[in-house]
Amino acid sequence: MQINFQSSRLLSPASPGFIRLTLLLAFFLNLLPTSFWPWFPDWVALVVVFWSIRSPLVVGTGSAFLLGILMDVVDGSLMGQHALAYVLMSYASRVFAHRILWLPLKQQLFSIFPIILMGAGLQVLVRWFGGDALPSLFYFVQPFVTAALWVPATYVLMLPQFLSKDRDYERPI
Image (cartoon, rainbow, N blue to C red; front, side, top):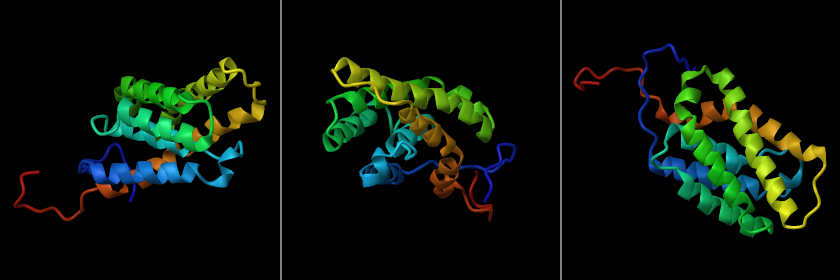
């Protein structure tokens, strides 16, 4: 299966159940004890940005806020830190969705990276205003790793949306 933006292949819409399952899986991946390593990606941010671009009616700022509050609770961080970052990342990705989807997949990285970096920087600012010390520069390795996973995540998350290659001539589409 290859995602080709020049093909005439139709995509079926993503089911809301699959979208919620991927958000839940991303949440559980963020709960792994390795999530404090700087090179471990922020899975929830990646999946929220992806579905905010691809399916904005299902995943929006409300879903991002709920996942952010849950991440704040289980992470033990300042309340609202993840929620604010995820909401603004979701909003920015919805604003730039048409521009991002127009680009080829590998060039989308250059549009996704500033959104992810803004979310990480916002989390640092919220913690800093809360009285925490500024983290080292290794903290900003995480947005690079998260943005680098955009292409594989796109392949994995869009896999169920592909229609079969066998055309049914009884259907109009």
